[in-house]
Image (cartoon, rainbow, N blue to C red):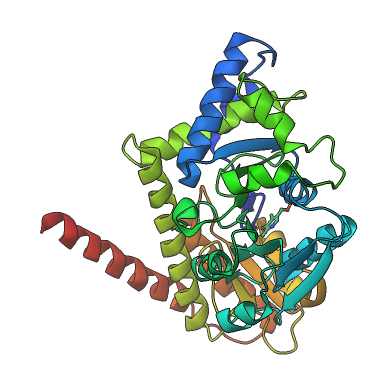
Length: 397
Ligand SMILES: *Cc1c(COP(=O)(O)O)cnc(C)c1O
């Protein structure tokens, strides 16, 4: 059979065709009125997309660049910081904060688990200058309780900043950033924004901007204060990735349309979409007798234990060879033990049904045992039918 290449990975995610077209035809120079208009619009709309009044800064980097910026701008060597680590990306916070010579306390839980709020409370003292966490830990498909964590951090001290890597969280999870008191929230272009990798963005609170006046870690390219100053004039400090800004403009238009002209509604639609695709996927996976890996599954992706005795690399390979579907293996110590199916951004009902149908074939081939064809698809259909009949009743009522 013919095969179409499709991404089911937690970044990069499927590209929005309108964003691809906008990129391909874009050629404006970055120090012109045309580009300044686009740049200013995109920054303002990102605030709406995130749901914040705080200033947003875009960095020309993958998501990790904005993670590093949050550390280099907000800490000084020797600062006591708390890293909440539950996987590969939590470990990245540890790596970055150590590279910038923070005094790092790591609260870690096993892969697949999330934190007990009491444990976090017990580790926090008023001298902790910053707490770093993921909204969703993409290496394990786990959702963390950002609201609960924020409550504890805000109760701890006004001198404790909360920095959230929501690179897969934004656009897949309902987050009330300002009300919860999140100081920095970080996103990436190649996740729910449906455009290629290359841009990261972060919203920064007043408390965090003030902190930057006194911190002394080295920074140059990722100097957020310099970018904020330039942004006030409609520009980036250095040459921005202009075509990615064009793509981002088109993606934000699409999200606004999905929300009937309102970007905040569009974000809610995107989040609800991911939630429903995730619920369908989990039901399908369970119906095949497979086990979900995460105790607190995220809407961004579903993480599945490889069946006993089977290297998950073989499942990933079979998806690729039979259907040109790219699903993700486990990372780090989970490599070979789990596989991950993402449902982020430009991802819909047919994608969900399709990958579950393919999973039935892949499983039959990889395990060599009979699979009840249709079992995963049927379970997902039932979830979808329940969700959409509920919605119809709401509309009719
Ligand atoms: C994708 C992702 C990142 C960013 O990784 P980059 O490769 O630097 O874009 C960071 N944190 C999480 C949770 C992610 O999913």
